[in-house]
Length: 205
Image (cartoon, rainbow, N blue to C red; front, side, top):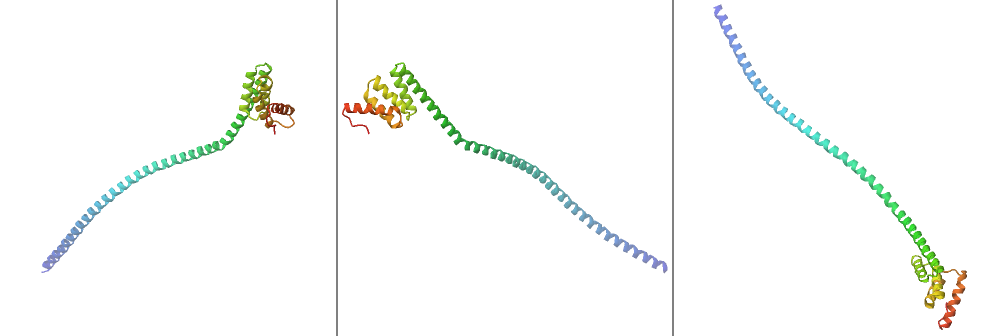
């Protein structure tokens, strides 16, 4: 009887153990499936991380390119600003340079006119009256306010080339430009008045 009871307990114990083992097996199988699922998710996450890392590297490289371009553009901008300032300074100097050129040009014209005037005087002294007239006319062309060039032309026509109309024409131009105290003024006026009276023209005003 006692043996039967012990055997029964032993069998019950084994049944409990088997039941526990089956539950453990089921739990283990469930755990394995969960581990496999988690492993797949882990691989998926790892792939996403690698993809993101790759994108990050690509973005970083692209960012470096953009930063390099921005630095180049900044340098080009600074160079453009510097060049623009230089051009502005040059542009502001242009009127001064033109004014200086104009002043030098006027001075050169005046000196050239004086040269032709002196040549006219020289040719007059050499009795080369035609050449003297040409030089005085050139002096007047360059400097229309040269009273003495008009006087010398008038004198040549009055005393040497004997063309009173041209003489009077140039003498009148001389009187418009000469000062009232010039010593030749009275002589020129007398000359004009004399030939006006002779030719019965209106007196000079």
